[in-house]
Length: 189
Image 1 (cartoon, rainbow, N blue to C red):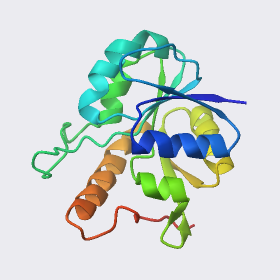
Image 2: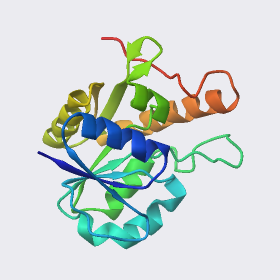
Image 3: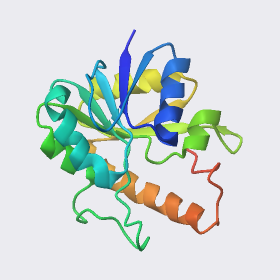
């Protein structure tokens, strides 16, 4: 059985924890201010501006672990773009800060409601996963599928930029009330 440590306590943290627990794995919730990381997989379920502080607190404990970045580096003051350079991503920034960890990008193109319900409209929620370690991606995909959702390998970690752009689009559509926070994009295979 896998233990997944989730740093954060918001809606996304709870929704991801629910998926992991439904699949039979153990979930550990940690605050942003410290604690011992038990999981071999660690989910950063905090807003992107808080990632630096979280890495300062937990960075040494993340060596050798799979770290899942769920952030969308959206400029929430203006909603007019991402806060990372156009040739990079939040996930790439995190990977640079954690050279001894395996970093994956996942869950950023889904809303908490679609994770918790397992549905985006009438379709099963799909989690897109990007990363450079096929074994780590397969392990995370297995946890997602065991929890009742679909998982799709979106390619290398360099695809995180496109996933973040998709997340940004979805957030801005929901914030403008053009789509519901209980809806989202679906992938039909």
